[in-house]
Amino acid sequence: MTNASNGSDTIISLLARNAKSYPDQVAMREKDLGIWQSYTWREYLDEVLALAAGFEGLGFKEKDAMLVLGDNKSQMYFGILGVSSLRGYPTPVFPDSTPEEILHLARDCGARFALADDQEQVDKLLDLREQLGHLDYIIYRDSRGMGTYTDEGLIAYDEIREKGAARLKAEPGLDQSIIGRTTPDDETIFLHSSGTTGKPKSILLKHRHMLFSMRAAREGKVFEEGEETLAYLPMAWVGDFAYTVAGGIVLRFTVNIPESQETVMHDLCETAPTMIFAPPRMWENMLTSVQVRMESSTPLKRWLFNRYIQLAMDMERDKLEGRSATWWQQVQKRLGEFFVYGSVKDQMGLSRVKRAFTGGEAMGEETFLFYRAIGVNLKQGYGLTEA
Image (cartoon, rainbow, N blue to C red):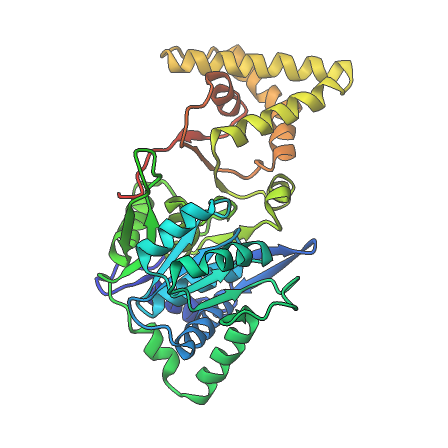
């Protein structure tokens, strides 16, 4: 059963409930050096609590803000929730943000702390440190290249985690204290608008907001409990926090994290998620890849592909215009699933997808029809960070 609605729930309390009720169920997988590593719900909670205790031991206080700068990694998500559990403000930043953009966001939230993915992100923050004047600590996840750095306030992620775990062991009841600190009306994430009409504006979202949205999505059959997802879109985008963190915990998704942005397509094929959100350019790139492969295939395969794809797209157009498929078209569509559609979906990593979404910009009609034609339930999504 999914988490029942409770007026006192927070994202942290639901994570603890999952850890108690489903301790050995896989909550998250992450690919590292070509191997998928798993975290159970119990391990997920343990990581969050260790970081929270470590951050607090470092001097992090309620209402403090922490910049989170880097690509999707399990440790970055643990850090976000660790900050949130202390009633602080985790503030994700797009990894390709310019120094000026980072400076604006850091000043806006008043960050004294930062969680950086690697050396590249640490360098960005160090360059801005003097201008900021209040960035006391930079915690880095990946220690490669960091051995010669002597800047004050630089601390390895593993060191913070180990110190936090030691605190939890030495202070009985600290774990429950951390779990119980937040309330539904506490802010859980500090995001920013797109900035298309000026500088990005700060947006604070509460636990109550995120839980209501995810439960409403469940009731509206937008998502189901136990979906498998792929976490590769920027953590600074509200959708990633909604689907990967809030939705992942409320509906007990299994979240798969690719090794890098360069391996997303390959890792998508390996994981074959049941739900995926992708911008139009990704859907278009996947379609182009299939078309290129077909150009180098045998004449028979090209003929089958072109024939059955055209049939299915014509049927989708008829459907949009209110015309029903004939019995002969339905027979042909079943043959197409056997000869073409199933294989194409498998090559794209979409063989198990029940729900697919796109948004953020316009998608070409032919691209949209192609995915609908091969049986991918692709829908256009709309949303605002503020909402």
